[in-house]
Structures are given as structure tokens and as C-alpha cells.
Length: 123
Image (cartoon, rainbow, N blue to C red; front, top):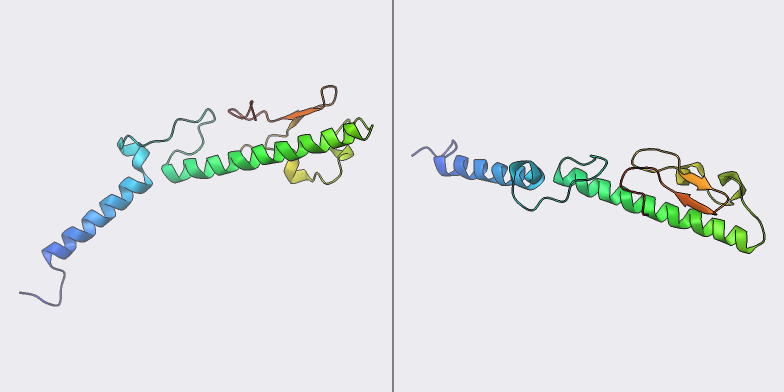
């Protein structure tokens, strides 16, 4: 019995642990059945990538809420903003989608800001 080297059981255990980690991180590609639905924009090919993309979706949703609130506040004050520069506190980072970096569409007539990124149409 060799006490200084790896035993067969130790080596087998290490291979199983690595295999489980691969299945957890790349589970969608191995048909585990717990995959998140496909995204319209094709972002996030792995489980971790999909979670990161969903996080950026929430950032986009939050940005749109804040910008639309700023538009509504300006309209309630009697001002009609014609561009993002007319909205106080709305910096360049809040004027584009965090995933695709597309500029938000500002419809001054309707007073509504929307995101053109695929899958964000209803935010």
C-alpha cells in the first residue's frame, strides 16, 4: 500500500467532484432538464451566463423605470422634455441598455422611453 501517492479512491473522488462541477456550471449544454428558457437576444449560453444576463435585464428595467419617472415628473411640472438632456439626474449610463449598449428610444410626443434590445420591448 502506497501512502505517499494518490490512491485509486482519491483519484476517483476527484474526478467525480470535477464532473459534478462541470454539470453545475455547464448544465444547459448537457441536457440536465433544469435549463433556463432561451433568450431572444441569444445572450448567456451557460447557466452562469444566463443569470448574469438576467441581472443586466433587471438593471435595464430599473433604468427605464427611473427615466420614465423623470419624464413624468417633468411633465407634471409643466415641462415637456424633448431629449435626455432635458431630464435632470439622467446620466449617459442610464440612456442605454446595459446588455447590448443600444441607446434607449425616447418618444417625446408620448413621453415614453423604451429599450430596443430584443426581449426588452415590454419593460
